[in-house]
Image 1: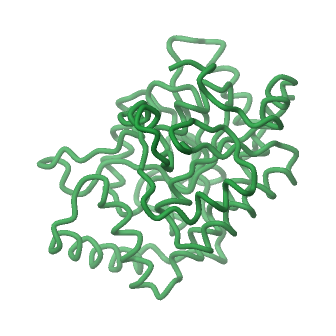
Image 2: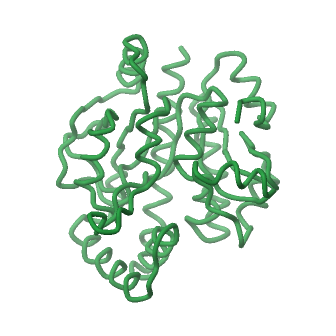
Length: 304
């Protein structure tokens, strides 16, 4: 696959050609992460936030077998209501194109497409990682390998807290991925502002992150991605101890029902939504919006 096989929305193409700031956005949060119409409102709000910070949003998805970089509002609305969308990662991106299907791109697939399109910064909610019990199941997200090889800055609220966070960050270290705590000495845990894992690098401004990225590229050596972990706003967080109990209950339910593979994360997110009476969704939206602000500022700093 080459960049010529992507359909890049005109406003995104114009911005890229002019060297302006562009921020990529994934689409599994639309197709698998939130219910309609919350997902559509969130997508529109996040794109508006990126524009307000002086950057151009580029939501990435596969529509009818076509890889799209930037979606007009009508396509955002359509994608938010698709009930049989495929969850598209790197491994099945080409299949989704060949089969003419519609799907939401995961962190891994979004990174790949963003890099092909020439987009340096990508805002998401949280990355995938090493699942609990991976020592026997070998269940590890493709997001980690993608971060190890694809030069895109990924702005997140850390790895999803349903994962084994210490193992996830150990794998990122092994893959040579710089993990940055934005304004924090302890890595966040998605719905919660902190975890038990220390941040290996702390940076406090978008300009410092942009300078770090330029330095990495100048040094070279097969530069992969960079993970920025941005704690959810304090007003929206669910305390880590409370979330631990909820996550354990959701994981027990998933095991009892035999959920496995790609179905695990969507199942757990939905079950946690039910167990928290909707609080997890509000926190999820708040952290995605928070990450969009930061990603746009980093993109602007890089472009300048």
